[in-house]
Image 1 (tube, protein in one colour):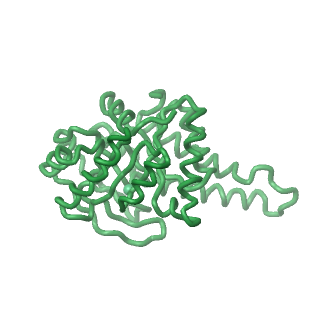
Image 2 (tube, protein in one colour):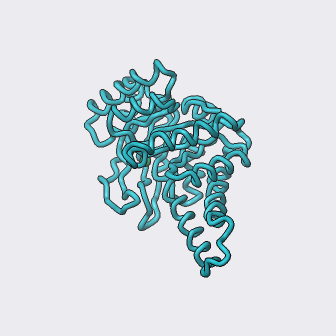
Image 3 (cartoon, rainbow, N blue to C red):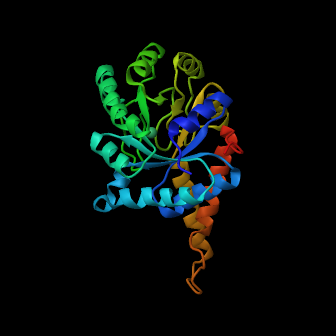
Length: 286
Ligand SMILES: [Zn+2]
């Protein structure tokens, strides 16, 4: 069933685990994520990015939300349909129209006051409709998957965090403690001491972006110290690419045509998803 971000993250915070959040772009990704989460009895957050939603003249909005809504109606599993990194209010309006249960507004590059105002505006739209809001304070930098560099990391300040949550009434907050988006060139080194201070200062569950490529022990430490949602995208793309290469090797001669072209891709992706669920402690929490 579809649930809000607030529901799954409040439960995770109370019982000290984190819920995996996966960006998906294709039906094969959505199915593999949902089937694997169901197998592990883990709540799951299905995230979509503005750029993919706007693809095909806006058809991405219909297809991506449609897949998750249809599956959630049948599956006995807590599933959040989440808009990831909305940069504009129009995207929030569209997500609300289509029945998303959660939106992230990203004003992390804005000055504090403007970030507060943008988040307040989204909360005012979303909360009356029972939709959760995630915001970001500090900035998680890095690369996107096209290797375009974004701004540098700016660590979140604990003093600012308490004021931000108080003023915006957001339901979850993404913090910057040393991860980055995209594929790492060198391993990250998370500032766990800073995370402890942030978690102590926060009334709401904390979110970690840039989860892909982060070493397992650091993910465990971050979950222990208050991260309740881990965002993953690049790790799934890497797994899919491994699967595509396996398919190409197995079926070098297309005779007969392979029955399931996507089977190796699904298997590679499912292995990554199982591993993240185990690391975060979200198995059997559904
Ligand atoms: Zn992100």
